[in-house]
Amino acid sequence: MNNHLYKKFWLLFAQAVTVCLAALFLLRMFFPSWLNNVFDHANNTVVVKQMESNTKTGAGSTTLVGSYSHAVKIAMPAVVNIFTSKKAPPNPHQKYLDDPAFRQFFGDQLDGMESQSQPENSLGSGVIVSEQGLILTNNHVVASADEIEVAMADGRKISAKVVGTDPDTDLALIKIDTDHLPAITFASSDKLNVGDVVLAIGNPFGVGQTVTQGIVSALGRNHLGINTFENFIQTDASINPGNSGGALIDTEGNLVGVNSAIYSRSGGSMGIGFAIPASLARQVMEQIVTKGNVTRGWIGIEAQDITPELADSFKLKLAEGALVAGVLRGSPADKAGLRAGDVLLAIEGKPVSDSGSMLNLIAVLTPNQNATLKIARAERVMDVTVLIGKRPKPAVAKE
Image: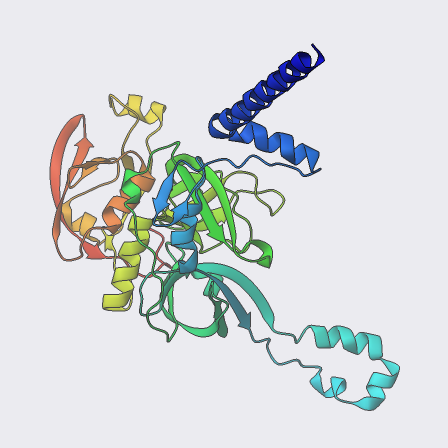
């Protein structure tokens, strides 16, 4: 009897072991992570879940959903930091600074005089636009600079020289003597829409290469009093001192604008930044390269915006266009018969919304070629042909 119970016990034990081994085998096959967690807890180790990437951006690379790292990797090598210095004028007190006797009795005062003779330094950013070393930046970054140094993204520092400037748009083209550079790709800024995501790359406050993200807040901003020709992209991407001349890119890493200015009461970013459209920057750059300067159209008028009151008085359907307030004697407009009181409605078929758009439309016209202007005069609409002139130097205020 005892022998029978002993055999029965071992049979049950063998069956239980077999069932447990089978269960462990099934768990290992179908639920390995659960089994690993059990053993890891037993070994006092921490298990971290690794999120699997689901967006491919290139061979062997992955990007998280909502990340713009792919665009930054493309554009950042083409954005440089610019350091400029301006020599101080000769110090009239230099003979006292070099006199040991004066230093002994007037050391503090002489130290103050010496600080006035130190060179002025400033910083900004730029965008490499050709493999041959051409760099686009703001005119105010390099204006009056005696020395320009470009710090590349790879750490190199190279001296640069000015190729040409255009103060009317606050753009400048400089060059470094280096080939095979990572030039940025231009996008068509004309295809931008309000609400599009954009990234600003530059060197704010000299802290180093920095990327900020925002959206296009508005297009075609003018009447800001920043430049003569204004057609700004407004963005809330953080732009601070040192960002000037840097790149505004889209989510594909293409250049849509050149960061130029901010609206600020404190000197820091308040969410209102302005960039020069890439299409305008490219036009200026190509003229500087081919002609050495920028040539613009001019007809010689002074204009003002059409207000609702003026629209009523001129019996216009809409408060749009530019009122001719004055005509320069002997100018192309004077020779074509334009006169004060005319309202410019369109230039070469393109509508004139205000005096700012009129200025930009005339500027892109080629000098010594005829252009058709649509005007309203005495409640009649007519076309006038004008032989476009060459815009004089900025000292001439009238358009």
